[in-house]
Length: 334
Image (tube, rainbow, N blue to C red; front, side, top):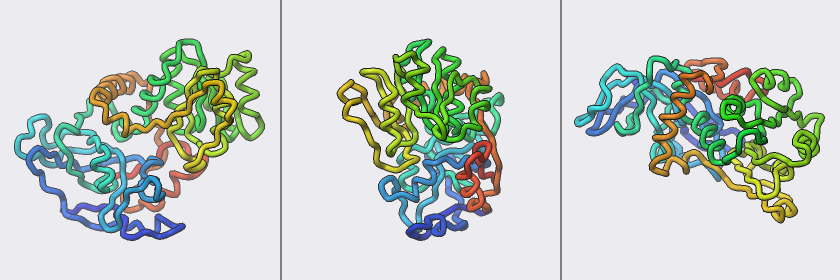
C-alpha cells in the first residue's frame, strides 16, 4: 500500500507547476488521538494554487510541501483513544493552518489529522458536496453573515460567476438579500439570472458604479464582497453607501488594492476577510458545520461540479481549473 502525493520538489520562478511532482510517501501511522483518512475526492481551489505560487502567501518548503485545502475520504485507521469515528466511515478532515502551512494537504492519498478535526458526513450529502464542504460554503456563509445586510437591501459581489459567487447568489436569495453581481463576460448574465441573481453587471460593456446607482436609485449597495482586488477595488468602494462595509477576500488582480480617498471620507470601510483567521474563533467552526450542512442538505448551497481527474493527472487538472468558462469546480479523485 502506497501513499501517492503531489509534492513541491523545487521552486521554479515563473513556472511554479514545474516544481511539482507525483511521488510515493509512506502511509501515515495512526498515532494516539489521530485519524488517518484515505482521501477519495478533493477540489482544486484558488487557495491551493496560492499556497505554492506566491511568495507573499506561500509557506511552501520544497521537498516537504503537499498542497490541498479540503476533501472527503474514508477513515483508514484510528489511533489510541479515538472514539468519535471508526474505520470505514466517510468523513471530511478539517485542515487548518497548522496542517496547510506545513504542507500536509489533501493532494495525496492519505492524511493524518486530530480526531476532533474530523466530521462524519451524513448519507444525504454527496461526495462532491462533502469534498467542497469547507472553503467555499463556509466563506460564503461567513462573508454574508458578517456584512449584516438587512432583508431587501443589495449586496454587491465581484467574480460572481465563480463557484463561490454562485453559492452566494442562492444563499442571499434564501436570506432575502438582493444581489448585484459583477462578471467579466456578458454571456454569464442569463445563467446567473436563472440562479436567482437580481442584477448582473458585465464589466466588458458597463461601468459598475454608474449601473449600481441606476439599480439602487442612488442609494448604492449596502455592502460589498470583492474577490478581485487591484484597480477594480476602487470601483467597488465607489458603489457602496456612505459608511458601508467592503470585505476583500481574493486577489485575482494581485496583492495591491486601489481605493478612492473620497470613498474613505464617506466612511466606506475596506477590510480583509480570511476564512482561516475566522476559524481561530472558538465558536465559528461549530456554527459553520451546523448551519452549512443544513443548507447543503436543503439544496440551498449546491456543488458546481466540473471535470474530474485522477490524482496522477494533477497538471492537467490545474490547467483546467484556470480556464475561463470551465463550467464548474475541477476535482482530483483517487
